[in-house]
Each structure stands twice: as C-alpha cells, then as structure tokens.
Length: 378
Image (cartoon, rainbow, N blue to C red; front, side):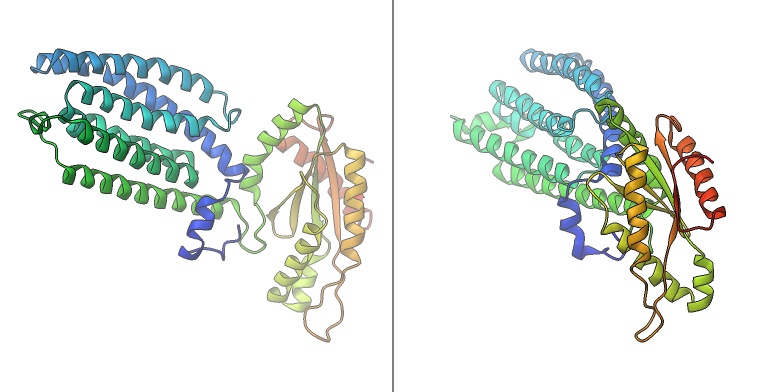
C-alpha cells in the first residue's frame, strides 16, 4: 500500500483487507507466540482449583476449575503443535481465537450451573475474554481482532441473558464472596469488552502501518528489500513443494544518474515512477516486483530461466518503446534497463546466492552495451 494512503480515512479498508504475504508471515510467527503463551497460561491455571479449596471455596466449583485447567492444557499442546508448522494452516488463528473465547464461555456456564452468581461475577474467568482479544494483536490481522471481540460480546451477552432468565430466585444472584449479580454490572462488562476490542483493533492497525512503512518504498509504492527478504523464503518453500521453478531478475535503469542531471531530480523521480508503471502493466499472476534502492529492482517470476528471459526481454522492449515526457512539449526521454537473471535451484539455494549470480549477469549486460537481458554467464 502506498505511504500516501495513511490516516483515519483508510482505517477500515486497511483493517478489513486480507493481510499480504509479509503480514501473513509475521502473523504466523505471532500465532506460534500466542500458542506458547496459551500453553504457559494453561499450566498456571492448574494450581488455581487447589488454591480455591484451601481458601474456603466450594469443592464443586474447584472441580469445575480443575476440569477446565486439564482440558485447557491438553488443547494448548494441540494448538502449539499445529502452530509450529508456521503458515501451513491459514485457518488456525481463527479456530484458536474461537476456542479461547468459547472455552471462557463454557467455564462460566459450568460455574453458573453450580451457582448463577459465580457464573456472572467470576472476574478471574471472565478476564480471559480480555486476554483472548488482546492476544489477537500478535497475529497482525484486524479482521481476526474484530471477529474475536464480537464473538466475546455475543457469547457473554447470550450467557448473561440465559442465566438471568433461568434464575428461579433473587437469592441465587447474591453471594458473600461474589457480591450481587445485576444487569448493570453485566452491561458494564460488555462495554469493557467493546472498549478493549476497539483499543486492540487500533493497535493492530498501527502495527500494520508500521509494517507497511518498513516494507514499502515511499517513492514508487513497491515492496522494498525488507519485504523481499521476508517474502522470498515463503515463495521458495511453495515452489519447492509444487516442484516448480523460481527465477529472480535484477534490473537496473540505464544511465539514470545522467537522466537526473539532465531533467532534475523531481522529474527524475517521475521518470522512475513511469518506468515502474510500464513494468507493472506487464506483470502476470505470481510475479513480484520490488525496489531494492536507487534505480535497481528485483523481479520474481515462478518460471524456469529460459521462459523468464523471454518474458523479461519482452518487458525490456516494451519499456524502451514507451518514452517518458518530463513536461508538455519536451523531447521524449527513452528509458531502458539492463538485467541479469538467476534461477533456483541451479544458480543458488537462497536469496543472497541468487542475487549475487543475477548481479554478475547484470554487470555483464552493462559491459556489453546496456539495454539487454542476460540469463547465463559468458
């Protein structure tokens, strides 16, 4: 997303859109962290039933708490095992968030079966709604945060209404330990859930903007080197799993410093964006163009090196055939590029090796007169 599209006007569109590759990669790491935190929190729940008994609490209430703690530990280990396979299960954050909220509702419901006032006024158990909402911030997906908050609001509202509807005597809503359960208190809790959802949503949006700023080139709106470094391992893993090919093309605009000197840096920036626009118009599904810095770009293509050369050489000719006009009436300025291509796996096993091989071929293309694409060593 271009840097210029910032501020509250794009809050909801940005928050509700599907995360891009970089955000999904970061979200997969966040899901693993959440799973680790969930496992630790589940273990911490185990001594709470014993503490409750020693403190004079009801045995039935403690047994319910023990059941919930054991079940939470088992499930947390299941979620942790799935989360360790980072990015493989795209649905996992949605399932685990639903689990976190619904598990809280279930325990509150079991407590209410024992004593309605406990189910309504148990602050310790209810607080896990807040924890579930806050933990979604680590997944970097605003849609997930909104979903989790709305689910918590809906489930707790229905639970409270059901308990009040089924209570046979006002005495069941009063307790020396838990006070008196009133509709006003439950409304306050619902408002608090909404507030925490709003705050967490804003945090997620802010994190998304920071990732955008760190992974996006401000001049062209293209992904930058940081984005490429995060995106490439995932693309390579997908290519390996599908038995396909992956080529990386290193492009450099020819004599661009001379262009800046002739027409000025502001017009030079427009010429750079013109070249990017022409290149983007020729991209196909699966292609990823990023700006590495200055007048240098990287283009990823899910193609073997021969077909990648054919595509890129066609893009070179098209770019050269569409000159840039710095001002109305000015002489057309021909913008060309030189490029080198390297392909996985024959030219390298990782991004740095492939970039080095592509750079060797790019420099050779410049030595041979520029405005050409090389896909092999001479």
